[in-house]
Length: 317
Picture 1 (cartoon, rainbow, N blue to C red):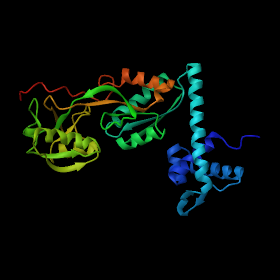
Picture 2 (picture 1 turned 180 degrees about the vertical axis):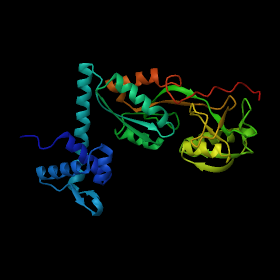
Picture 3 (picture 1 turned 90 degrees about the vertical axis):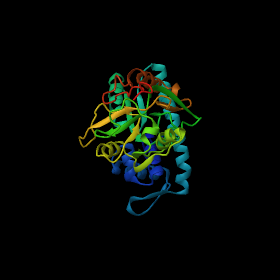
Picture 4 (picture 1 turned 120 degrees about the vertical axis):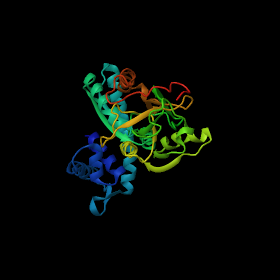
């Protein structure tokens, strides 16, 4: 009996089933909406089943048959990925699709450079990048929507593997004219009385606030933002200091105003930037090649736009 569907049709079907919208699915798999719509229509015609109930404004809901089909479709796509990985292992060629996530905080600094350098070495890799928060990264890895991700060692679950690359000590970010801007090193006690702009991301926010709780002081939080560049501009315009670990080579905020970077005292836990992946994914040739490539190239020395904040020089000020 001839095959009645293609893997591409299954991919589009799963994308629509998960998104509930042709437009959102098209954006996810990077094809046109008419292409996805045609694939779904053809699948339904071939199987003689209605897989989706059409709703207003292009909204789609899986029918009972569709819910049964989508589970099997995911299994078929997973097995196809295994066949592709096996072929790569046998041939020794680094190729095929690679879905990589990256923490939003530093994606713009690290990810494009990493992607370019990797596909220059391995042009047969179909590299897809996704900028995510930490929880989305974990969910994507568990659901096999991501193969691997670049992030911090914050809240890494036990069922995921973390491969460290390098450490990023924390520093205080201050406006140029701040009274603490010319210190050699600062402590949480020094910063606590002053207005603070908190980079309030899941995991990151509690990490920064832990410095103050461990020191027995309370920070004076006057602003909160989830955007690193907004935080930098708020600081540069005198709304308060902030704390971060990732540092641009530019010492100016997005609006051009100058910033000062002062190390925090030793003893505060640095963040480690590294790769996180699901158990077993390391066995694929493409993922192993990416891990090796990141170890050699994702460093402050080789990543344009990234500068490593040196550790605090000691207790002196």
